[in-house]
Image (cartoon, rainbow, N blue to C red; front, top):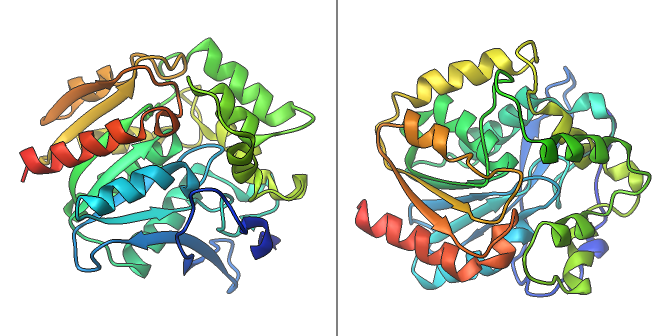
Length: 302
């Protein structure tokens, strides 16, 4: 596996990003002894139960910059890792290096073997929700609460939206992949050019983009997808999850509209709220509201 690492200078001077980088090593899972380095933010009271913020595609922990600060002000410990291939985490260079199973395993190694997290409050959006739910299914004893936003856990047995299928094709074939422009298209409010540049910072050239180029194609769209069996097993495990779950989908995301319904039907202890006036990247559109939702959910389920 050829591993790329974005130079530190690419992350210099990002707006509203005062958080110092931390790293944990995980196995590459390709049979070699060379580890991958996973970046994460860890702020707030060090002994507190962690609020884990998992980003999706094609973003990184920067997506949570205003939410991190808001939760710290409420007294919470906040962790926000970068998926392998994103942010300041190492980037396997080939599309074939990236599989759904590997991304789940890489994050499990980082959060459980490396950081030994327990009593986790998960907030997962997009791929952060898909990977996060697989972690909950595999290690439910480590999670105290779950908040799901604009995400899913598809098995390939139900047709996905036309908008998502277009996104799969675009990510794989577009001559230029501009992560900042993608974020701007998925929000309801304008995104400052400097913020768009921050989303592009992890990818100084196209050789670093195997992760964001490949992840959309890893979402199961047919029942014979390589990930389908493990997705089904996860649904079975999650149906036995007896901790509070909250869906917090936005009302203006064409890709995941209605995606909270399967969770409401399947999870024994699920509540619902709606983040109004927000697009797919609701963290950009409604950061203060998300802080309120997470904080209130923790308080009422304590």
